[in-house]
Structure formats: C-alpha cells, structure tokens
Image: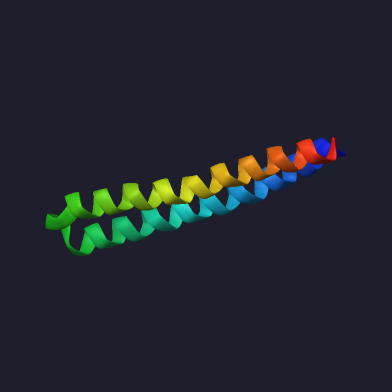
Length: 72
C-alpha cells in the first residue's frame, strides 16, 4: 500500500509539471510566431520557466520519498 501512495504522490507532481511545461512551450511558440525576431529572448525565458516547473516535480519526488519513509 505504501508503494501505491508513493506512486500516486509523485504521479500528481509529475502530471502537474508536465502540463505546466506544455503550457510554457505553447506560450513561447505563440509568442515566437507573433514576434520572430525576439526568439532568443523567448527561448531563454522558456528554459527558465521549464526549470522552475521541473523543480516542482523534483520537490514532489522528495515529498513522496519522505512520506514513504515515514509510513514504512
């Protein structure tokens, strides 16, 4: 049962991060389509935003590991 809790905890964090990364990419491509000469600025901001979204997934993994170690 603990493994199910671990899997669900991390799955929720990974799902949220995946959706966030998709929305970030969508926004960056829309911005690049409207203003193609600033693609380098958009790319820099997109990579920074994706790093923050992935950091939330890593925090979710840590929470899942700590929560699983407290139960078991």
